Image (cartoon, rainbow, N blue to C red):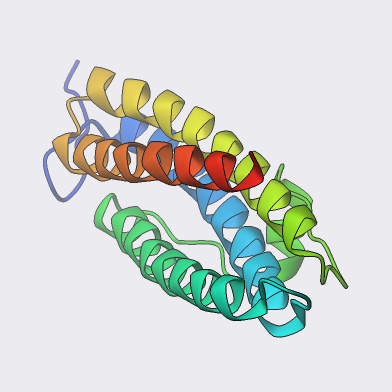
Length: 158
């Protein structure tokens, strides 16, 4: 029996599983992106200037990662989901509205980062088992960066 491969020489069945998981990750990133945009727009209080800039920095980074995840899905031969209805249906990160308190916003981001890290570790394992170095490298980079961000946001909260 011949094993079917995709356009980059990976097992097609494993790639389809990776695409499903990457689409779930894409949904979570997209919801978090909109949450952080809302925090940026609506933040109030003593730490406004500091948090306003930090939230902008974070949503710009999330936007880049959303694009990278979608392009990885395409590279694996899949189609990235691209509807907020799908995102809200599949994401474990909940959409939040009308948050203007800095501590609440940072706490929400910290919880979301932890959720992403857990999902990305699972994807890293799946990618490694599938000999998918491209997805493995992407997840490894994201995990390393977000572990540091988690530490920093945690330190902010005290």
